[in-house]
Length: 133
Image 1 (cartoon, rainbow, N blue to C red):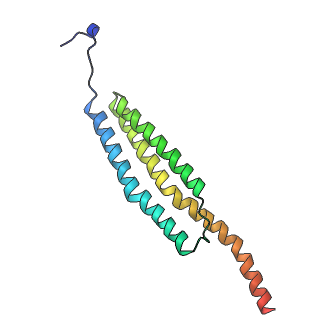
Image 2: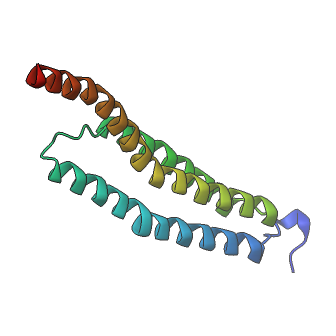
Image 3: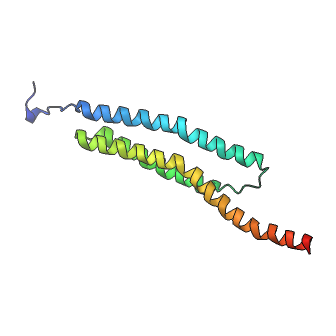
C-alpha cells in the first residue's frame, strides 16, 4: 500500500457508483418512457387538427434543452464526487430535472391551447349572433 505522500488513490465509494448508475438509468427510462410519448401525443394532436393547434415549439425545445443540460451536469457531479450522499442528491436532482423537462411540453401545449380556445370563443359567439340575427 502506498503512503499518503506518494499519492495514494482513493477509490470512489460504491454509493457514488450506485447513485450515478441509478440516476442515469432512471433518466434514460424517463426520456424513452415519458418524453417520447408526450412529444408523440403533441405531434399527433397537431397533425389531427391540421396545424390549427398552436404548438409552442420554441418554448418546448428551450425547456427540454435547459432541463436536460441541468440533468447532465448533475449526473457528472454525481459521478465525480467521492461523497455518497452528495452523489445521491445530485442523481435525484437529475431525475427531477428530466421529469420536469419531459412533462413541460405537455403543460406548455395545454396552456397554449387554452389561450387559443379563449380567443376562439368570442369568434364563435359573434358568428352565432350574426346567423341568428
